[in-house]
Length: 114
Image 1 (cartoon, helix red, strand yellow):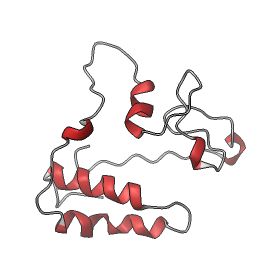
Image 2: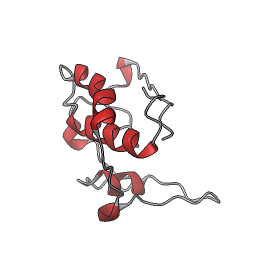
Image 3: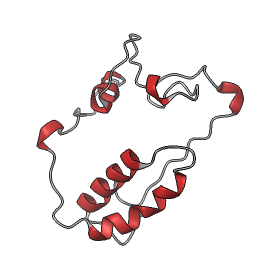
Image 4: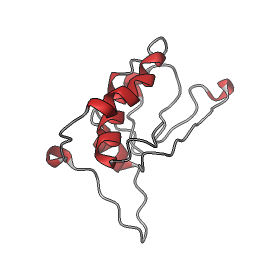
């Protein structure tokens, strides 16, 4: 995440319930989206993401776990990420808001976001 890139994935309604992978199964129930390739349901986003990792020559780690860097002043990042709260009619935005604040704050790229 560089603070200035976005990714929009649009899935046609006829794919409801038949997708799988890192974007979930698109069945309208977010409590069963963290399904690993082996069919196991996990709770941790880190464990879920790591299960779909493809091994190749590019190095990739599984996140920072309990050793994540801290952002000292989240004020600007929080105000920039407030736009996410407008999605609350469809999805609980709290997890996405928290991730946005973390990414924006640590990227240091606060003027070129969203």
